[in-house]
Amino acid sequence: MTLITDTISRAADTASPILPVLAGRWSPRGFDSSAVIDESTLTTVLEAARWAPSASNLQPARYIVARRGSASFAKIHATLMGFNRAWADAASVLIVNVANLPIDETRENPWARYDLGQAVAHLTIQAQHEGLHTHQLGGFDAPALAQAFGLGDDQAVVSVTVLGVLGDPDALSPELLERERSPRIRKPLAELLLVND
Ligand SMILES: Cc1cc2nc3c(=O)[nH]c(=O)nc-3n(C[C@H](O)[C@H](O)[C@H](O)COP(=O)(O)O)c2cc1C
Image 1 (tube, rainbow, N blue to C red):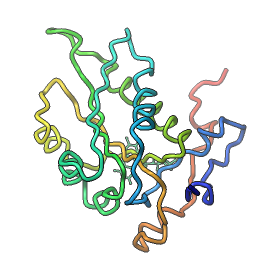
Image 2: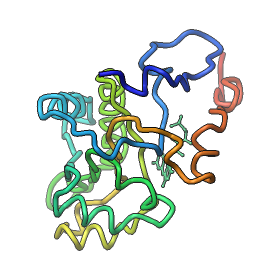
Image 3: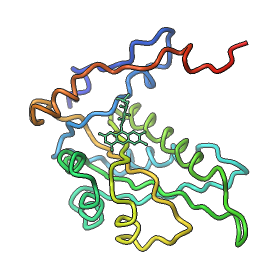
Image 4: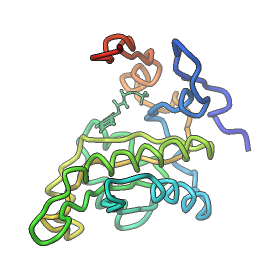
């Protein structure tokens, strides 16, 4: 199978070389609405998240995994903001990223969201390695999502990951196509280093 990934490169223009899988990751909106991710690859991608480090090895990350066509997928998609809903329905899988907040009855884990983000980062890189693409989302109705899946106050809905196979960008609306092709930019490294002694 020739993936569109093979013909489009949005690789980062780095000042110093980084791993190709890191440089090659980007967040598309044009996904192939017919692509199905095989179960073993999906498990591999989730396994990468499972093996992320976490504070005190508390492993606070939880996931709602929904394949396109499932009732859960429809529920997640319905909570997305319009600008995300317009394209995310073509994903193969939508994953809701949830942070388990308590350490025990009295204490909250201050690193729960940090650890969740790190686990999701691992997932995105494994997905890239598998020839898949991810696009993380903050634009959704978190309370509606929590209610739809019966989550409690001790479980924070932090983000949604769109996971799938790159599709034909020309199928996007002109506005989304422009975003799809706009340059990938970053602040200079020097601006990020508060101290570089
Ligand atoms: C926590 C988080 C929330 C995001 N929310 C959205 C979103 O709601 N809609 C969207 O189109 N992109 C969203 N993005 C994608 C970012 O805009 C994107 O990662 C950033 O512009 C850098 O582009 P790149 O991933 O292609 O390098 C989000 C990314 C993260 C990490």
